[in-house]
Image 1: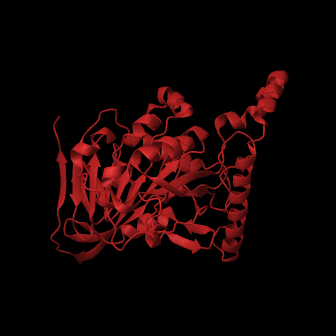
Image 2: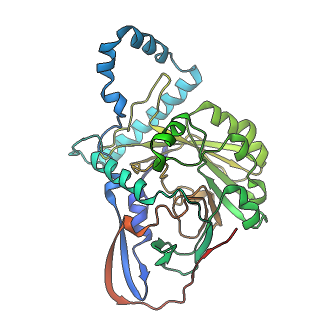
Length: 385
């Protein structure tokens, strides 16, 4: 179970626990084992500080007039509607955390060190998994058990009943049937971002391909989603992206807005990874925007829910939504994730980095003595262009 606490305002979930749960029983050749994910990536013990923040005082001393001007510009308050939204999220967050800490959910003896261990492991992970060469392939594990198998001369973990496609999203109509077959489609788009663009020249291994909003609107979601299906799209707090979802992307897909949820990122002690900000600047949350095909969809999705979790130190390693969405989907739903970076049991996953978090180096393998025989199929095919 990824949900460790639930209230009317939302959920507290453990991404790490979810990853460990889906690999409790794994077939490695004819032997049973279990996999433990590298927990260091989730050792977020303090608020995030960028390198320029740690030396900001020195720069202020060197050029006080210039920095006073910059501070005045940055201290401009956000619009009133934005401030109301931030205040709502903050109050709902405080209510959930007050109850959760009473239950002893968060550690009180965490020693903050600016997440040093998680940063180091994350940096090594980027370097070890980065590849400038694009490879196109697809595969599946149709067994009722997770397995370890080779692909592209490396070893990966594959959850049960998964399908995956490593292709550009522009090829989705060529590889998937467009028969309105999915009950739920989740997207984590590589939104156009200036800071990531700058990072691309300095830290190539930490970059990823970004897409313009106009390109996202062309994805054939309307032909993939069933008549009573749901769509969820991760979104940054940039107004341009959110406005594009409402005014361009959702209309192009034939989707009607249903609700906006908030993913609050917290440290191991339960504090937000940065402060709530009433001026232009980073917020401790990202948005999850939900919609449906029909304007009067019978599924009632509440607005303003919070999802609270300790985030992974790796960029865009989003928390699983399988359990929080369960009550809004049919039994045994067909689910598709686009721009996926890890696999989920019983899901179809699509993305250029679809196996990024499946690499066996991220897991500790604990072998069992029991042998197992299953009729399983793992099929990873390299396709030529």
